[in-house]
Image 1 (cartoon, one colour):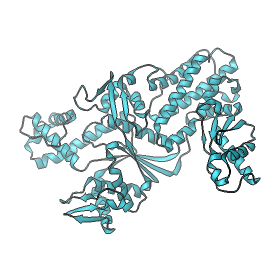
Image 2 (cartoon, rainbow, N blue to C red):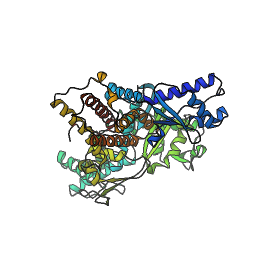
Image 3 (cartoon, rainbow, N blue to C red):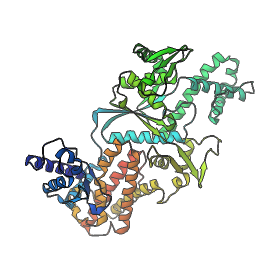
Image 4 (tube, rainbow, N blue to C red):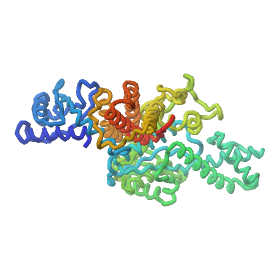
Length: 554
C-alpha cells in the first residue's frame, strides 16, 4: 500500500474510533485530504481534516485535531502534531519509507498506474484541424497536450478513447479545391483568378505541381464542374495523409477519426435539427432556421440552416455532439483554441436543448504559442515566409524538446517557446536535464555490469542503509508519484507530470554529486542501486505519459 493511502486509512480509522467512543459526535464527516507540506519541518504530510470537520462536529478545529492525534497510535507513524488553527502534520517512520521503495521496485514501470475502470469512459477530442494545409505550432501545443492528457487519464485508470474530428465538409474544403485549381492553372500559364478566401500556402502550389507531374495538363481540358470535385477529393486526401504523418511523427495517434461528412450523409444533421424544431427550440425567421440558444444562456440566437438550405457549422456540431452522447461516454473532453471561447455556450446550449447534461461535455481552451529565437519573436518561417509549421519546429528542435516545451506550462497560460533553449544540451534545458538523469542512471548500471556486480534481487536488500537526507527525500518524492498522476488527471494537468519529473531529476543529480553509488560498502551499494533503479522506473513512466523518449545513452 502507498504511504499516503496508509496514512489516509490511519486518519479514517482514528476518526471512526473517536466516533465509536463518543469523543466526536455522529455525522457525515468530509473525506480526508492529504498534502505534502512546502517545508520538510512540517512533516511528510499535512491535513486540514480537523478544520473541514468543525461544522459537522460543532467543535473547534483545534479540539478536533487533538482528538484525531490522540487516536493516531500506529507503529509506522513517528508523530502527529497540531499546527496553526487546526492543521495536523504527520511524520512517518523510515520503515514505511523503505516499504515504499520496495513497492516501486516490485511494480517497476507500472508504478503509479491505476487499474482501468471499464465503466469510467472518457472521450478526448483534440487537434481536429481543418485538413487544408500543414499543422502549425498552435496545433502542435494542442497535439502534445491532448495526447499527453489521454496517456495521463489512462494511467489514472480511465477508459479513454481519443478522437480527431475531420472538418471535411463545408466552405473550407470547397476553397481548398478552388485554391488547388487556381495554382494548377497558374503553373500551366493558363488564365485563372485566385479565390478570395483561398489558401496561399506553399503546400497548395506543391499539390498543384504533383497533379501536373502525374497527368500534365489533362485536367485543364475539363470544365470547372468536372475538375473541382476531383481536386477537392485529391486535395483532401493528400492534406489529411500529410496531417496524419506529422502527428504520427510527433508521437500522436487517434483511436478514431470521425468525418464531418458522415453526419450529413447519415441524415444525423437533419434529425437533430428536426428534433429541436419539434421541441420548439428551432424556429424559422427570414427564410432561415434559428436555434433559440438564448433560452440556454447564449447572448443571441444562432442560425443552423441558412436561407439557401445549407447547414451552418453549428448544425454539424450539434449533430456531432449528439452522436458523442449517443455513444455513451460518461465524460467528453474537447480541446479547442482560445479563439473558440464564444462557441462554448452555444454548443452546450444545444446539448441541453437535446435533453443531455451539458456538464458531461468539458471544453478546455488552449492559449497561444509565441516562438522566440535569439530573444526575437519568430512570426514567419524563413523557408516559406508563412507561419512556422509543426514539421519545421520538429526538424529544428526535435520531437522530445517540442513536446516537453509545449507541456511544461498550464494549458490556460500563454506559452513563450524559446527555440534556442529547446535545442541546447545543458542543464538549463529541462527535457535534456530529465533525459540526462535517466541516461546517467543507465551508465551506472553499465558500470556495475562491467565490474561484475549483480543487482536486482531487491527482496534481499537492506534499504535501511539509506539514511542520508537526500536519499529519504528521493524515496518520499517517488512515493508521491501515484497521487501526482491521480491529481494531474483530475485537474487535466499534464504539466504537473512535467514539473514532477524535473524535480525528481533534480533530486537525482544532487544525490549523484553528494555521494558515491559504486565503490561503497556492498550493502549500501546494493541499496543505492535499488534507489536509482526506482528513479529510472518513474522517470521512464512519466516520460512515457508525456510522449517523450527515455534514452539510455546521451
